[in-house]
Length: 124
Image (cartoon, rainbow, N blue to C red; front, side, top):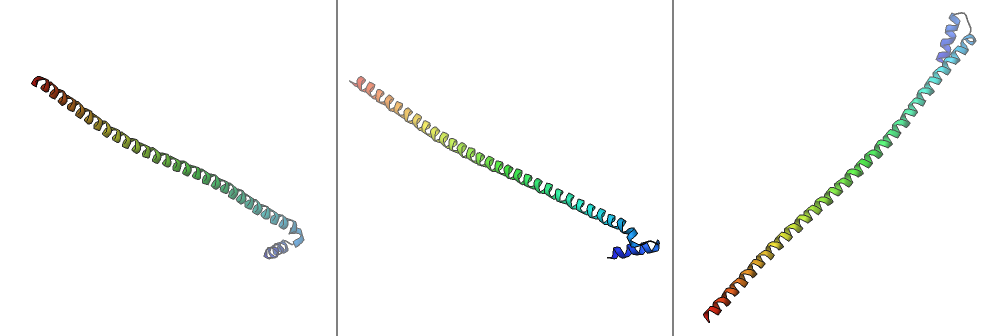
């Protein structure tokens, strides 16, 4: 309404009627409406692009998070296997030492028995 009054006042100052200026006024309103709609369209397109980017980034972030979690699980599994192997090696080492000690003991017993049998033979 105020714009209409302004256009009428300008028209009166120039000695014309409002109807002479109406097409220009209507065109100006159309241009403003067109620019506003264009701006809204650009904004909507930008928001759609931003939403698509956000969705893509979130999916990439989720996939990276899953990869990191999987890597962490694999590392934990590998560490557990390494610890288990180390425990088995220690057990095997202890068993080997025990077997070697028993073997040495058996050899010593056999040697002692042989010496006693030789001594018994010599005593006869």
